[in-house]
Image (cartoon, rainbow, N blue to C red; front, side, top):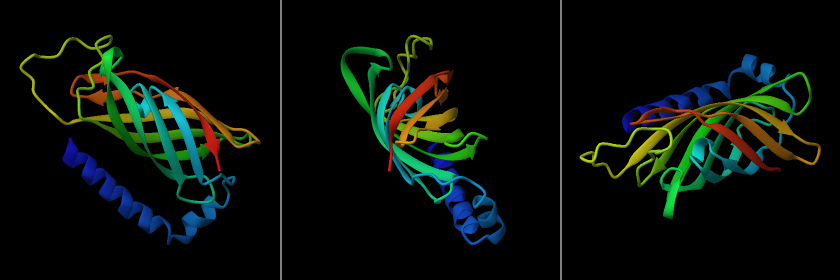
Length: 181
């Protein structure tokens, strides 16, 4: 899975490099509404698994492709805190598709979350095999959400973000709130 993520990000970076020199794509991007380039936000569920603080950067002045990274926490086994927590590192890319109303977007994204501990959510997945040993865990987190930006540049987002890892498909509903600048 790790090799596939490296290949995915390599292909994405080469695609983004070609789109910046494409005049047809640049004229299509000019039809999009302007967005603030930077956003900081807190996310419940979603790419950080349980709770995360994130920074997002749009790659163009007009809406379109963006990248994000953050730091999150989850319980030792997902929702089960047991007095301990684990750090997660969510990273990903997204694409903002504008809706007819200003400052409303459909946000398509794909992310990967790294954790040094197991990302099993006991409430949703059967107990793990006691003989399974791994010290590095990656989860794939695709997402589709609605994004709203207010006149004061507050950003709100809600949507569907399933977590895909060695335990299979775990559905999540994500909520985010933050500030664009």
